[in-house]
Amino acid sequence: MRLAKSLLAIAPLFCAAPAFSLPAKTDLTYSSPKADSIEREEVQFVQIGFEGTVDLVSVTIVNPDTTQTEVYNAETAFFPKKGEMFAFTLPKSLTVPGQYQISYAVAVAGTGSTADPKSGSFSFTLDLPVPQSAVGSDEAKPADPG
Image (cartoon, rainbow, N blue to C red; front, top):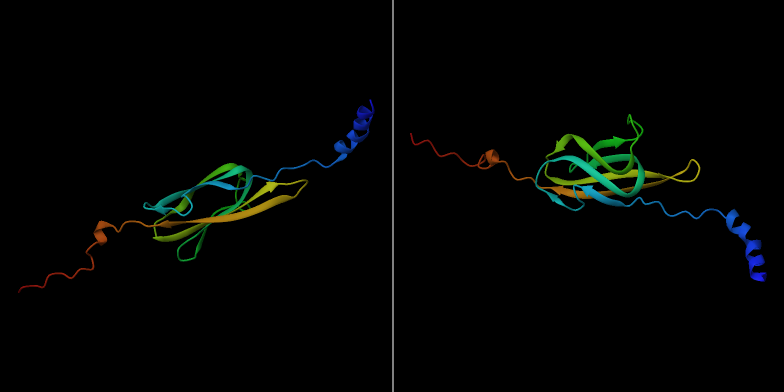
């Protein structure tokens, strides 16, 4: 009986305590092109996937010449993107050989009006074969016998 009264006495303390929240699941779990991959065909789209639901803030590609291509920006987008998986058709296919970096920023709703931002990036290399028409274009032409 004494134990039951003790439990009843402390029960309100557990109810009044702030709720325990689990950390937001914002880890990048999928990408296409894959991180650290070597792509042998032009890249026409980018896909990224996360462990949990996120609000997508931005996606940017840093090209081999260090110029940037904005793929998505929540501030200028017609519709906000929220989910676990996102796919984008690029405005122009990536065809220049070299290393590319995909940078992203996401937010996860916090308590009240706050959000936990998280950003990250991954890289891949584009190594396209030399077109057959370019092979031999620099070779010397045979001398004119005449």
